[in-house]
Image (cartoon, rainbow, N blue to C red; front, top):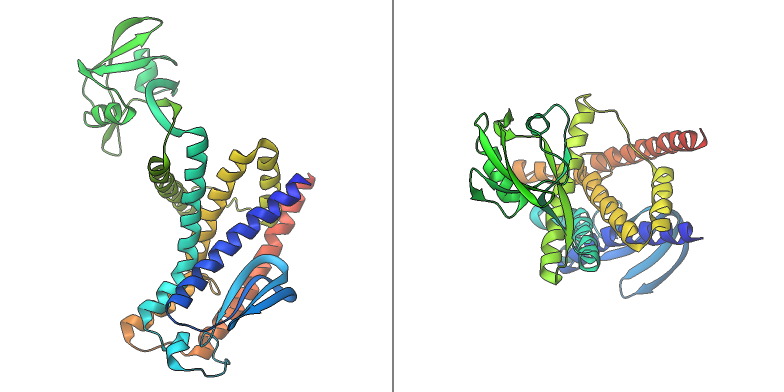
Length: 339
């Protein structure tokens, strides 16, 4: 029962926030919004307020906001209220607002986690010494606290990294606290991507944080996670990493596991999924926001809009292929779970 509730809440929140981003910016631009929908397929329930109908639909795998002028088959409305008559930059803002809302949600969720359990802060205490690297050859051990480099005091992990990375290939003398005593350990950082590395990871402590520090941490971690995901996608495309992509079934399983562990793990997972939703929608895949942004960008460069019927057909075919891909991934996920 906990898993079911968690899945409904997490999926509903991610979809709602994404579509709310489109909706709010469209309203701000004066565009007539016919419908704000959660889900696809036949309508389960709904109500109307003003010009907009708010609906809940059968298939809970997404949602949509239907603007006046987005579909060439729509009836004509006043140009001031039609999406297609708005300047390119306004239309791009409406489309980009959905993914942006997902990134913003991730920041807020992570900030909430940091306010509850503290901000993860790396220290100068060694958590792990990587095998085959200069640190292990020099004799550094797990639990060592590095307090100085060549006599210069270091109080934070960033200060330590700065000292080591700036001097690849040079002999450094690390002052280390170990079991109540101090000792000096010589080490020569190896060169990695042009900077010095010795092969250690920090012990991470949770430091109490207020609202603004937590929000700053949410932004920082959202940027870091986004970079890691993009790096993994690049490795997948170049064949350096396996194409390990999960579908709805796998996501449901992960949400269920996180929900059993508690609210904080569930919030962390929801933030990670929100970042994924934002990034996925920015990919240049037909029917997604990324492809619409490309069409709008082309219009902005050439000063000529793409034929609406051709663009509509492009997105329709892309949507069908996307559904097929979801079916294939779902089948694979079910097969893996049954093994």
